[in-house]
Length: 247
Image (cartoon, rainbow, N blue to C red; front, side, top):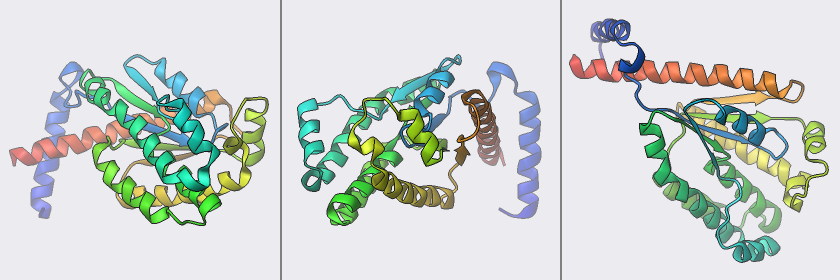
Protein backbone atom coordinates (compact mmCIF):
# COMPACT_ATOMS: atom_id res chain seq x y z
CA UNK A 1 0.00 0.00 0.00
CA UNK A 2 1.38 3.43 -0.95
CA UNK A 3 2.04 6.02 1.74
CA UNK A 4 -0.88 8.31 0.75
CA UNK A 5 -3.25 5.35 0.63
CA UNK A 6 -2.03 4.16 4.03
CA UNK A 7 -2.58 7.64 5.51
CA UNK A 8 -6.09 7.66 4.09
CA UNK A 9 -6.83 4.27 5.65
CA UNK A 10 -5.55 5.41 9.04
CA UNK A 11 -7.68 8.59 8.93
CA UNK A 12 -10.81 6.62 8.05
CA UNK A 13 -9.96 4.13 10.77
CA UNK A 14 -9.67 6.88 13.35
CA UNK A 15 -13.05 8.29 12.38
CA UNK A 16 -14.65 4.85 12.65
CA UNK A 17 -12.95 4.33 15.99
CA UNK A 18 -14.36 7.61 17.31
CA UNK A 19 -17.85 6.73 16.13
CA UNK A 20 -17.95 3.13 17.41
CA UNK A 21 -18.33 2.64 21.13
CA UNK A 22 -19.87 0.19 23.57
CA UNK A 23 -21.90 -2.60 22.04
CA UNK A 24 -21.42 -1.13 18.57
CA UNK A 25 -17.67 -1.77 18.69
CA UNK A 26 -16.14 -3.54 15.73
CA UNK A 27 -14.88 -6.27 18.07
CA UNK A 28 -17.90 -8.44 18.64
CA UNK A 29 -15.99 -11.67 19.34
CA UNK A 30 -13.66 -12.51 22.19
CA UNK A 31 -9.99 -13.44 21.94
CA UNK A 32 -8.16 -16.72 22.55
CA UNK A 33 -5.34 -16.95 25.09
CA UNK A 34 -3.03 -19.95 25.60
CA UNK A 35 -1.28 -20.10 28.98
CA UNK A 36 1.79 -22.34 28.83
CA UNK A 37 4.54 -23.34 31.24
CA UNK A 38 5.96 -26.16 33.34
CA UNK A 39 4.03 -27.80 36.16
CA UNK A 40 4.34 -25.59 39.21
CA UNK A 41 4.59 -22.37 37.21
CA UNK A 42 1.12 -21.29 38.29
CA UNK A 43 -0.78 -21.93 35.04
CA UNK A 44 -3.91 -23.43 36.53
CA UNK A 45 -4.07 -20.87 39.36
CA UNK A 46 -3.76 -18.00 36.88
CA UNK A 47 -6.25 -19.55 34.46
CA UNK A 48 -8.82 -20.16 37.20
CA UNK A 49 -8.45 -16.56 38.42
CA UNK A 50 -8.92 -15.20 34.90
CA UNK A 51 -11.94 -17.48 34.39
CA UNK A 52 -13.71 -15.80 37.31
CA UNK A 53 -13.89 -12.68 35.18
CA UNK A 54 -17.17 -12.15 33.36
CA UNK A 55 -17.19 -13.33 29.75
CA UNK A 56 -14.23 -15.70 30.07
CA UNK A 57 -14.36 -19.42 29.29
CA UNK A 58 -11.61 -21.74 30.54
CA UNK A 59 -10.62 -24.95 28.77
CA UNK A 60 -8.33 -27.41 30.54
CA UNK A 61 -6.40 -29.29 27.85
CA UNK A 62 -3.47 -30.74 29.79
CA UNK A 63 -4.80 -34.14 30.94
CA UNK A 64 -7.07 -35.89 28.41
CA UNK A 65 -9.56 -38.33 29.91
CA UNK A 66 -9.86 -40.46 26.80
CA UNK A 67 -9.15 -44.18 27.14
CA UNK A 68 -7.23 -44.08 30.45
CA UNK A 69 -5.93 -47.64 30.07
CA UNK A 70 -4.43 -46.77 26.68
CA UNK A 71 -2.80 -43.68 28.21
CA UNK A 72 -1.32 -45.84 30.98
CA UNK A 73 0.18 -48.29 28.46
CA UNK A 74 1.77 -45.44 26.51
CA UNK A 75 3.14 -43.79 29.65
CA UNK A 76 4.63 -47.10 30.79
CA UNK A 77 6.52 -47.58 27.52
CA UNK A 78 7.51 -44.15 26.23
CA UNK A 79 10.40 -45.54 24.19
CA UNK A 80 7.86 -47.30 21.99
CA UNK A 81 4.81 -45.06 22.09
CA UNK A 82 5.91 -41.40 22.00
CA UNK A 83 4.39 -40.62 18.52
CA UNK A 84 1.16 -42.44 19.46
CA UNK A 85 0.98 -40.56 22.76
CA UNK A 86 1.48 -37.31 20.85
CA UNK A 87 -1.47 -38.04 18.54
CA UNK A 88 -3.57 -39.12 21.53
CA UNK A 89 -3.05 -35.75 23.23
CA UNK A 90 -3.69 -33.81 20.01
CA UNK A 91 -6.95 -35.72 19.44
CA UNK A 92 -8.04 -34.97 23.00
CA UNK A 93 -7.39 -31.26 22.45
CA UNK A 94 -9.19 -31.34 19.10
CA UNK A 95 -12.39 -32.22 20.96
CA UNK A 96 -12.48 -28.70 22.44
CA UNK A 97 -12.32 -26.92 19.09
CA UNK A 98 -15.99 -27.27 18.25
CA UNK A 99 -16.93 -25.27 21.35
CA UNK A 100 -14.43 -22.46 20.87
CA UNK A 101 -16.12 -20.68 17.95
CA UNK A 102 -19.43 -20.57 19.79
CA UNK A 103 -17.81 -19.16 22.91
CA UNK A 104 -16.09 -16.46 20.83
CA UNK A 105 -19.25 -15.55 18.94
CA UNK A 106 -21.00 -15.03 22.26
CA UNK A 107 -18.34 -12.42 23.08
CA UNK A 108 -16.38 -14.60 25.51
CA UNK A 109 -12.62 -14.72 25.79
CA UNK A 110 -11.33 -18.30 25.72
CA UNK A 111 -8.35 -19.32 27.85
CA UNK A 112 -6.47 -22.58 27.37
CA UNK A 113 -4.74 -24.10 30.39
CA UNK A 114 -1.93 -25.47 28.18
CA UNK A 115 -2.33 -25.80 24.44
CA UNK A 116 -0.87 -27.62 21.44
CA UNK A 117 2.50 -25.86 21.76
CA UNK A 118 3.10 -27.52 25.13
CA UNK A 119 2.03 -30.82 23.61
CA UNK A 120 4.59 -30.47 20.83
CA UNK A 121 7.42 -29.38 23.15
CA UNK A 122 6.68 -32.17 25.63
CA UNK A 123 6.75 -34.92 23.04
CA UNK A 124 9.85 -33.64 21.29
CA UNK A 125 11.50 -33.64 24.72
CA UNK A 126 10.25 -37.16 25.46
CA UNK A 127 11.54 -38.38 22.12
CA UNK A 128 14.92 -36.82 22.80
CA UNK A 129 15.10 -38.40 26.24
CA UNK A 130 13.90 -41.89 25.35
CA UNK A 131 14.64 -42.26 21.62
CA UNK A 132 17.50 -39.85 20.83
CA UNK A 133 15.23 -37.83 18.47
CA UNK A 134 14.30 -40.90 16.43
CA UNK A 135 10.73 -39.70 15.88
CA UNK A 136 11.22 -35.91 16.01
CA UNK A 137 10.67 -35.28 12.29
CA UNK A 138 7.57 -37.47 12.29
CA UNK A 139 6.20 -35.61 15.32
CA UNK A 140 6.81 -32.22 13.65
CA UNK A 141 5.10 -33.33 10.43
CA UNK A 142 2.10 -34.59 12.37
CA UNK A 143 1.96 -31.34 14.33
CA UNK A 144 2.05 -29.00 11.31
CA UNK A 145 -0.71 -30.98 9.62
CA UNK A 146 -2.84 -31.13 12.76
CA UNK A 147 -2.25 -27.43 13.51
CA UNK A 148 -4.39 -26.51 10.49
CA UNK A 149 -7.43 -27.77 12.38
CA UNK A 150 -6.75 -25.84 15.58
CA UNK A 151 -7.69 -22.31 16.56
CA UNK A 152 -4.59 -20.09 16.53
CA UNK A 153 -4.45 -18.18 19.84
CA UNK A 154 -4.46 -14.39 19.70
CA UNK A 155 -1.99 -14.48 22.59
CA UNK A 156 0.43 -17.08 23.96
CA UNK A 157 1.59 -16.50 27.54
CA UNK A 158 4.56 -18.49 28.80
CA UNK A 159 5.02 -18.55 32.57
CA UNK A 160 8.74 -18.83 33.19
CA UNK A 161 9.68 -19.83 36.72
CA UNK A 162 13.01 -20.85 38.22
CA UNK A 163 13.66 -24.49 39.08
CA UNK A 164 13.78 -24.13 42.87
CA UNK A 165 10.49 -22.26 43.08
CA UNK A 166 8.82 -24.65 40.65
CA UNK A 167 9.84 -27.75 42.62
CA UNK A 168 8.77 -26.08 45.85
CA UNK A 169 5.30 -25.45 44.44
CA UNK A 170 4.78 -29.03 43.29
CA UNK A 171 6.22 -30.56 46.45
CA UNK A 172 3.72 -32.90 48.02
CA UNK A 173 1.61 -33.27 44.89
CA UNK A 174 0.90 -36.69 43.46
CA UNK A 175 2.65 -36.14 40.14
CA UNK A 176 3.93 -38.45 37.48
CA UNK A 177 7.69 -38.84 37.23
CA UNK A 178 7.61 -36.57 34.17
CA UNK A 179 6.58 -33.60 36.32
CA UNK A 180 9.77 -33.72 38.39
CA UNK A 181 12.21 -35.20 35.88
CA UNK A 182 14.58 -32.27 35.58
CA UNK A 183 16.34 -33.63 32.50
CA UNK A 184 13.00 -33.83 30.74
CA UNK A 185 12.02 -30.36 31.93
CA UNK A 186 15.29 -28.90 30.62
CA UNK A 187 14.67 -30.53 27.24
CA UNK A 188 11.10 -29.20 27.28
CA UNK A 189 12.33 -25.65 27.85
CA UNK A 190 14.75 -25.93 24.92
CA UNK A 191 11.97 -27.12 22.60
CA UNK A 192 9.43 -24.61 23.86
CA UNK A 193 11.84 -21.70 23.37
CA UNK A 194 12.24 -22.83 19.75
CA UNK A 195 8.46 -22.77 19.37
CA UNK A 196 8.24 -19.28 20.92
CA UNK A 197 10.88 -18.05 18.47
CA UNK A 198 8.91 -19.42 15.50
CA UNK A 199 5.68 -17.84 16.77
CA UNK A 200 7.40 -14.45 17.18
CA UNK A 201 8.89 -14.69 13.68
CA UNK A 202 5.37 -15.28 12.35
CA UNK A 203 4.21 -12.09 14.07
CA UNK A 204 2.15 -13.83 16.75
CA UNK A 205 1.56 -12.18 20.11
CA UNK A 206 3.83 -13.91 22.64
CA UNK A 207 4.46 -12.81 26.22
CA UNK A 208 7.00 -14.40 28.56
CA UNK A 209 6.16 -13.72 32.20
CA UNK A 210 8.74 -14.55 34.86
CA UNK A 211 6.77 -15.10 38.06
CA UNK A 212 9.57 -16.60 40.17
CA UNK A 213 9.77 -13.76 42.67
CA UNK A 214 6.34 -12.14 42.46
CA UNK A 215 2.99 -13.08 43.93
CA UNK A 216 0.14 -14.70 42.04
CA UNK A 217 -1.83 -11.44 42.38
CA UNK A 218 1.01 -9.43 40.84
CA UNK A 219 1.41 -12.01 38.07
CA UNK A 220 -2.31 -11.83 37.40
CA UNK A 221 -2.16 -8.04 37.26
CA UNK A 222 0.67 -8.18 34.70
CA UNK A 223 -1.16 -10.72 32.57
CA UNK A 224 -4.35 -8.66 32.59
CA UNK A 225 -2.37 -5.72 31.21
CA UNK A 226 -0.96 -7.94 28.46
CA UNK A 227 -4.45 -9.19 27.58
CA UNK A 228 -5.75 -5.63 27.43
CA UNK A 229 -2.92 -4.64 25.09
CA UNK A 230 -3.63 -7.67 22.89
CA UNK A 231 -7.28 -6.69 22.60
CA UNK A 232 -6.32 -3.14 21.66
CA UNK A 233 -3.95 -4.40 18.99
CA UNK A 234 -6.58 -6.77 17.59
CA UNK A 235 -9.10 -3.93 17.58
CA UNK A 236 -6.71 -1.70 15.64
CA UNK A 237 -6.00 -4.48 13.12
CA UNK A 238 -9.72 -4.99 12.59
CA UNK A 239 -10.19 -1.25 12.04
CA UNK A 240 -7.52 -1.28 9.36
CA UNK A 241 -9.03 -4.36 7.70
CA UNK A 242 -12.47 -2.77 7.71
CA UNK A 243 -11.28 0.56 6.40
CA UNK A 244 -9.21 -1.08 3.64
CA UNK A 245 -12.46 -2.45 2.24
CA UNK A 246 -13.87 1.07 2.14
CA UNK A 247 -10.90 2.59 0.29
